[in-house]
Length: 184
Image (cartoon, rainbow, N blue to C red; front, side, top):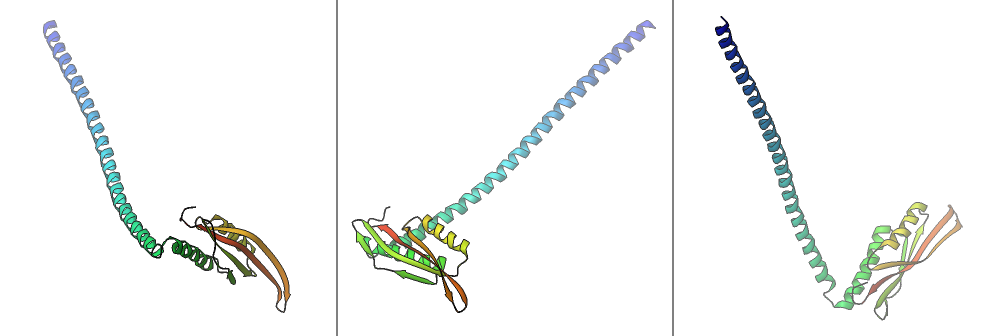
C-alpha cells in the first residue's frame, strides 16, 4: 500500500504543479491583456486629441488666410495715395476711432502738422456730466493706444452752475502722432 500511496502522492504533486503553472500562466496572460487594453485606450485618446488638434490647425489656417486678406485690403486702401497720404488717413482713422469708441459730446481737431518725420494732429475731447470712472478709463485707454500714438497733453475738469443744476465738464487734450515712414 505504501507503493500505491507514493504513486498517488506523485500524481497529486504533478497535478498541483500543473495547477500552479496554469494559474501563473493565467495571471501573466491577464496582466498582458490588461496592459494591452490600457495601451489601446491611451492610443485612442491620443488619436482623438491629434484629430482635434488637426481640425483646430485647419481652422487657424483659415483664420490666418482671412486675416492676411483683410490686411492686404487695408494696406491697398491706405497705401493707394502714397506714403504721406496713408499716414494722414491713419491719423484721421484714429480720430474717427476716438469719436466712435469714447462718444464725446464735442470733438475739436486742428490741422495736420508735419515736423520732420513726425506727423501730428491736435485734438480735444469734451464730455458733459460723465461718469467719473468712465472718464478715467477713457484717459487711460487713450494713453494705451499703440499706433498711431495718442498722446494726452492735458486733462481739465470744471464745474459750472446752470439752470438744471451743476454741470461737470471734462476735457482731454492731446495729439495723434504718426511717422511719415509708417514706423514708430
